[in-house]
Length: 369
Image 1 (cartoon, rainbow, N blue to C red):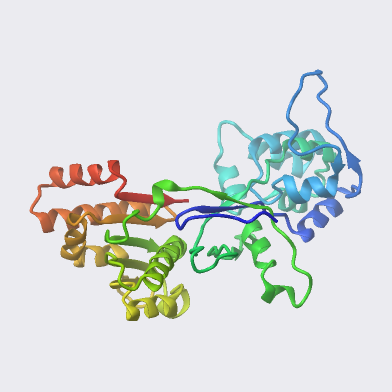
Image 2 (cartoon, rainbow, N blue to C red; image 1 turned 90 degrees about the horizontal axis):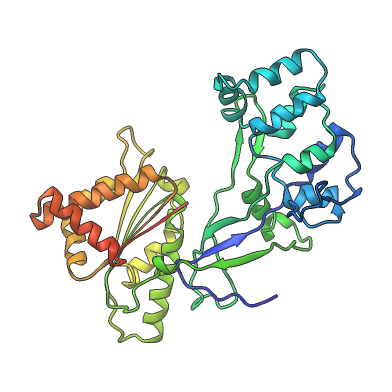
């Protein structure tokens, strides 16, 4: 395929595929032929985009283009009422789609993460024709992952860091994340010597999250869980520069990393410790929230090392924060604000304006998914 070019901080876009088991189960529940060739033609004669390339097979549409594992929408549930005989199942669908009370929908569909397969299993008299699903199911979208490698070290590779989603719902259903399990099954360790599959991928640039052009500028990296992924690429990049030019002046690289358990969840631990020993990383501060009765969070480490943070920021350093939730990003932002305030003798308002200016200048960088 075409060689990929990327920078640390970029994202890898991956187009996942629904599992064969889920596609087959949907076929069994509704009794349609997966290899039937279908086409979608607008009845009003207007040119419209179809949700997938046509003509194609039902198997292809359900495997590559339609999301069959997301929570069923109220609109689709309303459509299913037309294909359900009067009775318990019909009454339940009407209750789920009641415009005056969505609490039952939130409880039965959203909280339990019921997808179209689960709904058809639990309501066996619901029998929509396949064209209803083909028109009503949402698109299966690409997933984006922070790249966790440097092309200076891995010329023909791109690394990503993924948590495999695997859980049991409140109705005792075994649930698997579509994209993470698709990627898991591509891994050589899962293939058991079979021919590896392929995945459509592409690079999405993220110039707002790149390392400073000058290697002498300090870098403060803050991540929780898989939020550490881009920082592995950052560290590898600086390591490659030091290796190729030993006399090159490089700024401090400070990593703040939080996860649940040190022995279970600490990603790239050995690699980071080696970079610390060789001087590529100047400091690592960790926080493990589940290793003791008293929970310990990364924000506490930020506040405890306020002077170090301010020292490097005042020298022109960059701050990078990567995480999964807006709540995490807000708590880190508050901790950074506090660290700057107490170390610089600024007022609350002055520290707030200072961090706003850092953001404006591209020195306070955020990557959230």
